[in-house]
Structures are given as structure tokens and as C-alpha cells.
Amino acid sequence: MNKIRKGDEVIVIAGKDRVRKARGKVLARVDDSHLIVEGVNLAIKHVKPNPMKGTAGGKTEKPMPIDQSNVAIYNPKTGKADRVKIQITKDGDKERKVRVYKSTGEEIKTSA
Image (cartoon, rainbow, N blue to C red; front, side):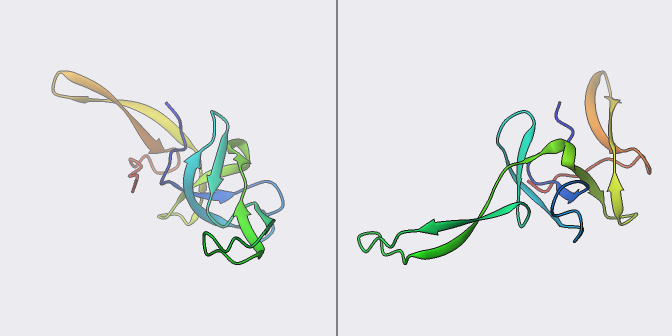
């Protein structure tokens, strides 16, 4: 079970965006250890104009993958980065795994 999923709000704890305390939602998981986060790790891409598609040329910003070890999940209750632990809860006779914040013990609700 991945501790950081698509739709989670994360905060950068290492890398070039750490200085500005960049925060954003996880847009996608590239592989097991890389994420694409909106507004974080942006690269400038030079685009040629294509009149057939109706696109103008110029510079565009493209989000690049960032390693999941460089981000931490954002806890809105404390306003800080937090760690995630997996807890097994019982619903009647079924057991299910739930992600919870390590500091407060609350269940993490994913918006995606």
C-alpha cells in the first residue's frame, strides 16, 4: 500500500522547492517512487508552433517527476508535514488497512 496517493496534498521537504515551502496535490504516480505534483519541480519546455493543432509556440512550464522521499503528506490540522502509518481497523468481521497521520492518529481522507 502506497503511503502517498493521487489526490493527496503534499509539501516539499527536500530539493529546490523546499525554500519556498511548495505545496500541491499529487497529480499522478509515475512509478513506485516518483510523483508528479502540481506547481512543484517545474521545467521550461520550448514548444514549436503548430498551426494544424492551433497551438502557439513559446516557453511552457511542465511539471516533472519528483522522488517521493522528497515530499511529505500535509496535515491541515497541524499545518505541517506529517508521516503516515498504516493501521488495520475492523469493520464487523472484515479487516481493512487505513492510512492515518502519525501525529494525530486521524484517518487520511483522499479527495481523488
